[in-house]
Length: 74
Image 1 (tube, rainbow, N blue to C red):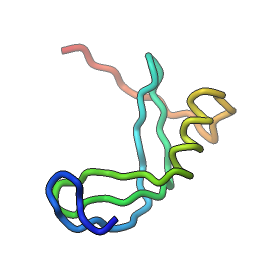
Image 2 (cartoon, helix red, strand yellow):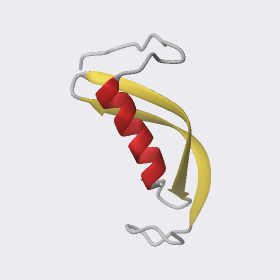
Image 3 (spheres, rainbow, N blue to C red):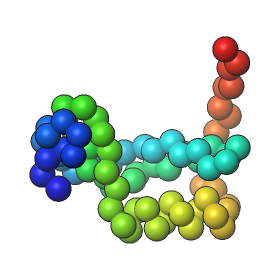
Image 4 (cartoon, rainbow, N blue to C red):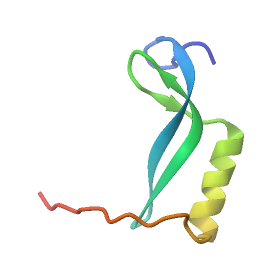
């Protein structure tokens, strides 16, 4: 993909950290290959990355690390 679907900005390949919510659970994925719009920041994932994230959230393998996450109520 060369251009962002939303703003038509230039899309570039990067490795990112992605926070994903599945029901009441929150998952943090690191070293995720993605394409990110340099103008608006919209993120696009390829099928391989999406399949791996789906396997994690539906199968719940042991995580590499566990991080405490603060929760605030507004």
